[in-house]
Length: 129
Image 1 (tube, rainbow, N blue to C red):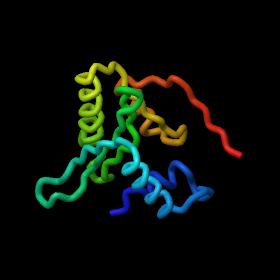
Image 2 (tube, rainbow, N blue to C red; image 1 turned 180 degrees about the vertical axis):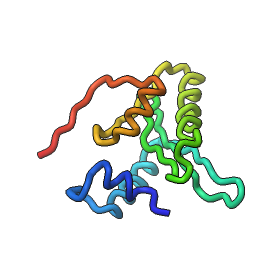
Image 3 (cartoon, one colour; image 1 turned 120 degrees about the vertical axis):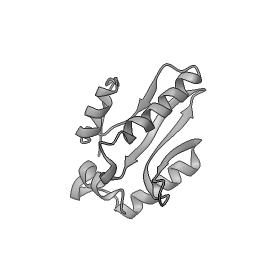
Image 4 (cartoon, rainbow, N blue to C red; image 1 turned 30 degrees about the horizontal axis):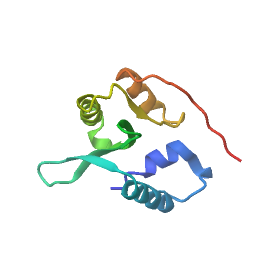
């Protein structure tokens, strides 16, 4: 199972500035360095990974969703909804009324999914040199 390939190509295409392996390492380091929490969905039969969501609580309580992924074969089975719902409920229980996520404009399916969940675009800025 190679969970990054499709998303990586969809987001960055063949002109990506780092290799897939470099991106994997960057994600792993990002998760370790920050106060990041990860919720995992596993298949009950063999404990294989179905999906995960990671989030960090920053600035005294602001919930930032960092990464979310569900294996293709389990897409459209409600796992995405359950993962986001878990983080959103955690934020509400902590007294936060908002959950933030940064999304590339190339991730059309994710943007539509988030809009259906009630997320709104608050700003968009992308620069490169």
